[in-house]
Length: 145
Image 1 (spheres, rainbow, N blue to C red):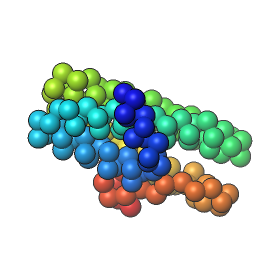
Image 2 (cartoon, rainbow, N blue to C red):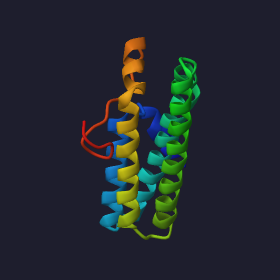
Image 3 (cartoon, helix red, strand yellow):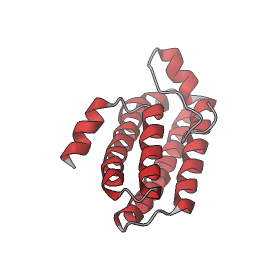
């Protein structure tokens, strides 16, 4: 686990980074390389948590303060984050049992793609307008870039 924390410090928790870590985790599990999968799983879980918490604690409160509509949208984003965390938790539990659930992989990819699409409607344009950088979605885990 300490190695995973050190690995996260080497990465900015961008969507690109999350895509790469997720893909490496799934590839290593598919290949039956469970030691490597464990390393990527730990790193991915921490990086995802850092990314989501950053949005939740830094960006979302500022965005929600804009208007009632934005506040409702933030509540939706938070619910999406909860669903993403649950789906990832189920996948990681399976990986610890040395099982790769392809349906869970697909569900995570779909949830992330939908979440990114939702963020792109108003939150990401607002964030860009404020001058803050936020990672942009890619063709991998986070859908159409």
